[in-house]
Image 1: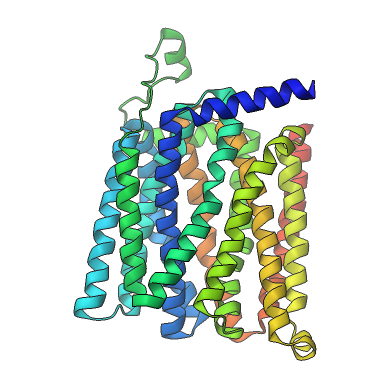
Image 2: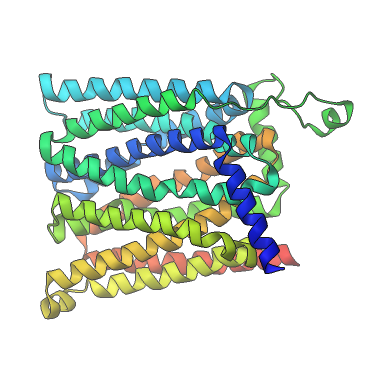
Length: 434
């Protein structure tokens, strides 16, 4: 029986690797994500080097709530209504152009100030929100439903490639010509992503029949954007698992996202004075795990339920963050030195990233399996909107804590918060099973 399952899995992987549209999308998304990774890397270092303030850094990250609120409902409707490939190509080329303009502004006119970085971040977030909804619909559109789990795991490998490629390019360009080098590199990657996605072919959806018209299935009707968005809201309210995600995602993001985006970056760059190259090594290690974990997760995910994976991941993340809060205590650094703290911090952060990858794969597979294809863009935008509104608030609070309190306090509060989220998740999954 095991041999039959292994053969079936190998057949699916061969089919996916021979699927031209899937491979082209995978290449395009890799370059697009690498561009985003480069920007996160260089802008984080640039702002911290410019201001030396975790609060200012967190404020810049938090401003993204404005374009998210404005663009998220629009992006979901556009993704379900219009040609997805053209949308993604247009967004990629637009992003590449304005990144080039900001790089020229920095080099030829004046260095980017904090207000200019605010404007740049808002524009980048706007393009990312508009890109994410159509991108979420591509894989279910070009592979069969029974290949979806394999396709999602294989496509997740590019997360690791992105972190490695993006970190190397970002470190090299930032050391060579500063933030402008990162902007130019990311712009070029976006243009490559645009060129590649243009060759993806999405099968036309089946025309509606009288039966699926009654059920609301088939192609998205050209009704108003607001009514289409609220149709997706009704779908979310009617599905217990997606409702659980909608509740859990904002809470988890509030406590978990600031660890990676603010607290760890501030600890490594400002407290431990890590170099640009060493920071790149940390990102590369996370990238290696991003390649290994999706490959190893395929058989594991077939044996465990999504609920079990999500809850187990939350427990492990809580333990790891609590360990990090202990490792950065002043007494530990006095006893073992900053080099020990650096190694422990990077090691725990890499393990956290590994667990997070597995949890994300599990939730993505279930989401794309349970939600109808013609609703995926809008439902994804709803979940992203509700989940990410909590992130700016968390970043501001944890940025302030990093500036005003010992860094271990931030990690301890995150650990307690994640444990509370785990208790809520366990209760929700128990109710669903009953």
